Length: 199
Length: 94
Image 1: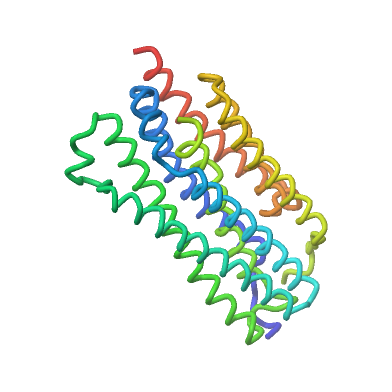
Image 2: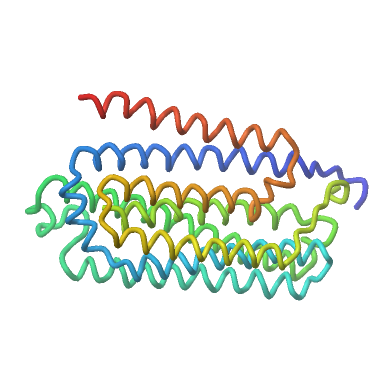
């Protein structure tokens, strides 16, 4: 297969370029959040108190730990240890599902209390609180979709590792998946304090 | 192919990075329990940015990439900072 040209640096740089667009996408939402926090500090404070720090904190631990195993999976395949790379990536995937199940229960509890976008209970609240929960659902929702997409790509890469399409000499697919996954972690690093802690 | 600039980061380094990230998460939860007013926002964002920097440098391998990657990432975050900063020139002085 040595006649096939693969641009390793170019492939990784392309992934970074895509990540830049993701940063600007979430960046726009962060501008929206900070502008409304500035306008409705009291309402954001009251609404933020209703979010459960344990859900948010638990999910922070799950994502950071999944990032650790993703990073170690790349080191493992670079060393040529296919078995360990698959185990580490499998743990990353498991933690992605821990995150999503956690999110399911968190959102479920909110829905149970009648809080979801455009719900009658929510619309009776002050404007600032409606905006807070609107941003909460949009931003954690969009982030959740990213977790789901990341998990799907991880499953694909697990198969590629298994049949050695990703191997000691050609692992850029795993590296790029890692970059995407760490970006998802990176965004959560900001979402967690903004929604669960500071307000 | 990939072999030319392969830098393998040890498991030990990654686990140390993880311990620091966990510690910073605990710190940010702890600070939030103390009422510092606006300083709470500053503290939370400072800790978050420190964590983000650690993730980018180590987990995302940026520390081991060439200059093109480092400059591009820097410019992206600079643009984001300009977006947010200039928005607040308007919002904060209304």
